[in-house]
Image (cartoon, rainbow, N blue to C red; front, side, top):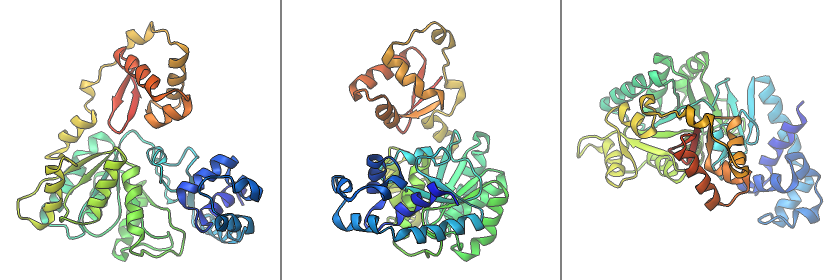
Length: 366
């Protein structure tokens, strides 16, 4: 049994901690296992960690439950993605309230170049079905990972279209991996796995699709994508909640417009009108705003060849050795330079054709 995973799962089970304070405990103590080995006096000095939470940590009653969960994952071939590990979705990693643990059925790479979320009403119309199929088929040339929630309606259409067009697709669930909801999508889930897709959740096995779990699921969808497309939505609904969260995470949001007066286009028309979403007539609109049009990319190799970096620029450029795309939050956190200084460095590197700014506070090495 993986001892590290045991404690990482156990930490998420401690009553009253949550994802934000859980990460805080890991940062202060140096790891999940270290949290359970820490002295009570030291834990009491950590901001936001109360007496009841400390007692729960000290009692270590959650370890047996974590052991059962770990047994379940090993028995059913489920990956456990810890937020500090390389296989965890990097885009989601930078969201302050992202889950500490994700359970994944399937071997999908979440850190591919392009990830698109597609959401919408459960009461999808023929127009919504046609538009979802059209959008997914047009994304084929971009080799994207399609993310949705496996719910009735637009979600189901997005996953089906992805399977049909040979695109990998990830379903974020609002329940444990002991079941599939809705049950009618069991065969679809199986096809997704066979085609290289996956099922993803933060919920333990045995957790049912209760109402309160769906908004939590929505934040995962919003956080793990580069951009979110709302195909159809009434004036209120889960898709609009996901769009609000995506905006809060600085993700680009797109909405498919519909006829005035159509109930299930009202939400899309409203967020376009309120400048909370870009209008999406076809995928070329998305490519333009996301800067996916390679013909517009300028790669200044000659400039890079003779460019000398100062010490502060070297700190920034070192982060691009692991990945061509790096989030601004990571640059600030790992270089320990002031935001003002980093802004100046990034602007200089952009002018010299070494980096380019991407939507969502990301930078790409050219």
